[in-house]
Amino acid sequence: MILAHHIKERALFEGFNKVGIVGASSLEDEGRRLQEWLSLGLNGEMRWMARDVEKRINPLEIFPQAKSVVVVALNYYTPHQHQQSPATGKVSRYAWGDDYHDVVKEKLASLLAWIQAQEPRAEGKICVDIQPTMDKAWAVRAGLGWLGKHSNVITPEHGSWVFIGELLLNLDLDHDTERVEDHCGTCTMCIDACPTSAITEPYVVDSNKCISYATIELRAPELPVEVEENLSGWLYGCDICQDVCPWNRFEASTAETRFAPREGNVDAELADILELTPESYGARFHGSAMKRAKLSGLQRNARALAT
Image (cartoon, rainbow, N blue to C red; front, side, top):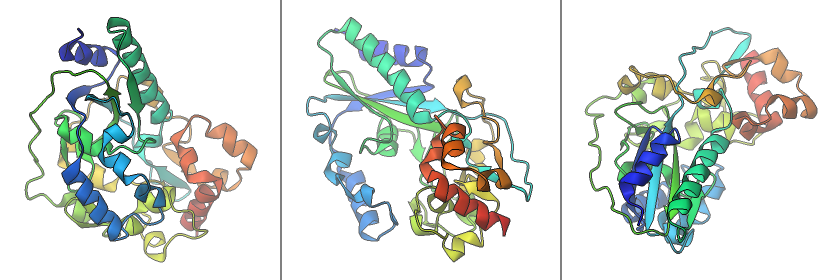
């Protein structure tokens, strides 16, 4: 019988920086908070978040055989900095390199294959953001970190610069019970720094006001006036609340080379973005998370910055 500590050792071997294992139980408290957030319309146009709510709350709705959830975190920090030029637009750090969905999924697939080689009866379901799972809730439950006031998971070792993934397993393993204490304390730096006041209260983000949401998820032909007037140079996403977080002052560079910035993905030339065609857009952002915004969204954002 494979043991939990063997799986954790293998997860670290695969390149993950943190791993925890918890029972595949329903996220009742977290689910209630999600439903309240949705009822207030704070998800904006992300109507997909209101679909399959029960799947987000209960992992058995995704993988009925699940008994354990292996939760992993992967550091993506690289020490590059934005240049702050009027001719360029800043890109959120998470999208500088290859698409994290592909990288994390590949590592989890390798982990699952190893587990199945040790335990032939093992079956699993890989979840990396696209699946209707509450990644941050699982990371907190598994003791990887705590939920910061900006609503991102903060790990003591890597701050909030981590990607999260889960592996649902049909194996009954020893589960972690200790959680990381909330170390935000009285700090409100993320709340104070947000130029659109999108963090309406600690741990609550109004997507309708969020620069990251507007520049990535929003499909409207124009950005909301409040956002456009406070873009602060952001073309794709926004890292302001993470950049000011004291827990992100001691970052260590990731060992994952695929997260190294692609050319033009730290600061993108606005003129280049505006000249993209569907063909050149597809070629430039192949395998990049930046495709999430679509060509129309990137060019809309570039126009807003160029005016």
